[in-house]
Each structure stands twice: as structure tokens, then as C-alpha cells.
Length: 138
Ligand SMILES: [Zn+2]
Image (cartoon, rainbow, N blue to C red; front, side, top):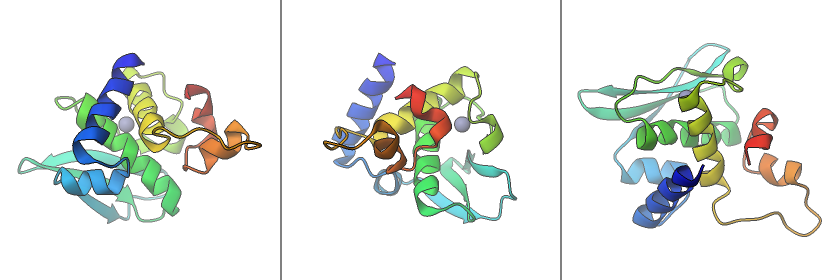
């Protein structure tokens, strides 16, 4: 987990933001909202060497942000690997790269913030769009 934290720090330092959409824009990563069916949240590809994050246009805004953060994790951590679709029913995948991308997304979205007094971890993590299934990774 340490190296993922380091990669998030490096990325937020070099871009000056922890907002996944702003980071994508700065890195010239295209974010496309598409009809991906009911189950797929997003995936990452290159087309003519342009990195593209494909996001389901049916996702609520916070979940779309989580998905963009997850796919940014693949962009940073797994540049040479063909990564799978992110789907709700594979969120808890034990696949190493999926776990790493989820950890990256959690670190990025919660970057340098902590729960307010009286706020539970559930409320804190939910406020960033982090799916409940992944709260144990925090
Ligand atoms: Zn993934």
C-alpha cells in the first residue's frame, strides 16, 4: 500500500489537485461518457496512443468520479497492462491490479482529509463516492 500512497502524492503534487477530472484534463486523458449497459461502470484504453477513460453515462456523479479515480489508478500503476472493465459485481475482485486501482482511488479521493468530528468512517467515505464494499480498504 505504501507505494500506492507515494504514487498518489506524486500525482497530486505534479498536478496541484486531487480532483480526478482535473487530473485527467492535465494529463490529456480523454474522459468519455458512453452507454456501457447496466453493469459496466468504466474502463481504460488507448486509441492512437491517446489515453481514454470510458465512463458509463448512467452513473451518479460521485460514482463516476470514483470510477475515473479507479481508471486513473490503472493509468499510473499499470501502464502496460490491459485492464478489465470495472463492474459492480467484480468490485471485490481479488485480482491484484483491481485491488491496487481501488486503493489508488480511495487514496486519491480522500487525499489529505480525515473524518470531521462526529462523522463516521462510513459517512466520510460515502461522501467521496467510495462504494461501501470497498470501505475496508481505507
Ligand atoms: Zn480496474
